[in-house]
Amino acid sequence: MDTSNISMSFVAKYPLVTWLRKSPIEISCMLESELGYKDKAFNCGHKNYVNKGDPCKKTKEYYEGLQIPGYLAPHIYPLIKTISLAFEHGDLQDLSIEFKDSISIDQIKQIFRLPSNREHFPDNIMYIYYGENVSALNKPVDPQYTRWLDIVGFDHMGAGDVDCK
Image (cartoon, rainbow, N blue to C red; front, top):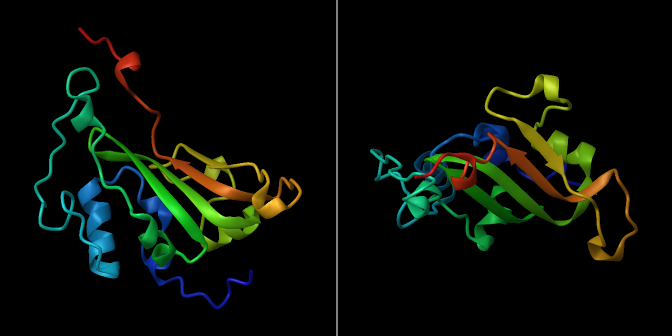
């Protein structure tokens, strides 16, 4: 699919790499101001949000955060099928995207202005993964194409990683 004529206003204004380590309120405000989506719990009206969770006793709160509904994903970028967000201690830890169909990894890097190698990652990014192109619309496996993108802001830290008493 030729994406050269698709408006990239949202991802141009809010590049994906800038989302990592942001609070659910910050991300929700981007969606609210640009796309008119207002989350019930996390929205621009909750500017004083503070995460009160911990990985041992208040795990639900520790992992709380905004989830992007499926219908909204293509409004962020038309080739996106779903976006999953994983929060920890009030910051976006992981952003996972599934595309509607496989696209080239080079095209993903260009569309979302992703750094080509680790030496050029911004400080808020630890890893960028491109999933394998496994049975994307019955196409043969090609390592240059994928249906998945995963951007990690920091390593997961849950109850198994700390001394819970």
